[in-house]
Image (cartoon, rainbow, N blue to C red; front, top):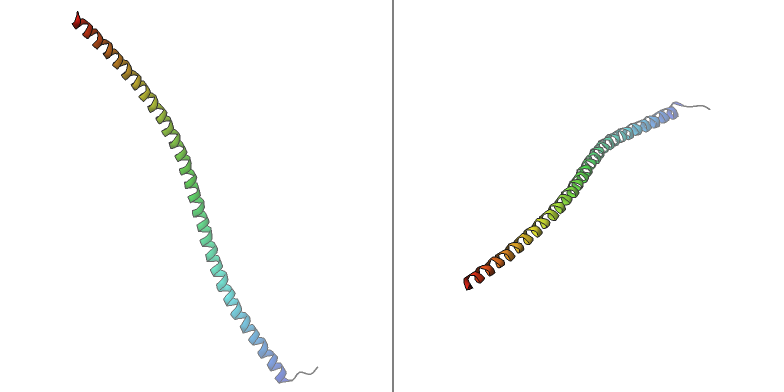
Length: 109
């Protein structure tokens, strides 16, 4: 095959254009890669924040359960105290009634 200067010039020009296109594509891909790395970093930070919030939520749930148990226990204790106080009040009323009955009986004698 015989190449003439014009054909060689065209093929060199074509190769240069292709090289320029590839370089432009490399710049675009480089920018896209940089953006992808930045997004990946943001996603990683968000994942860390989600994990932290999840731990806080789990801790809060455990604390709430503990608080609920403590409140229920305190409620039982208060009900028992109220029950005891009601019994003491009834006993005191019965004693007052007996004393009043004795006093009325003593006044009638």
